[in-house]
Length: 159
Ligand code: 4NP
Image (cartoon, rainbow, N blue to C red):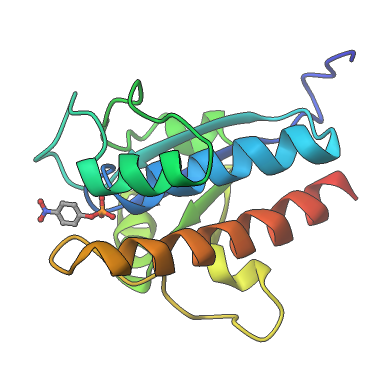
């Protein structure tokens, strides 16, 4: 596939720690983009700095593995001002992440900010709940949510 740098979407998923929700959103979106033939740059990051360089949470790795995807090689990083110029779309997992992104956004930002579930008809404005302090079952809900959001966003970007 040829790459047109001017129109190739670049999508960054952002949660708080970059070890639970946004790596799962990244994985779901990578899979969906490959399935429908969408050529995109894809990454994830956190607004917080507690887990820099860490692999995803074991429970996030496990739910990805149950769904056939290995995310053990992902490493957490923090959002930078440059992300707002490098990515065409920055996708927050919840309203706190969205508000934090708004506050971090530099004056010359070009990225379009949205919530992941804005891309799911009927779920606009909803959060992907933080599963970090919950149990394993919460990660199955997270996975279902990020798959729904990834599908909606990938379909929209595919046009
Ligand atoms: P995430 O989950 O934002 O989905 O990666 C969390 C991970 C770590 C923390 C909070 C949420 N924490 O407080 O360390």
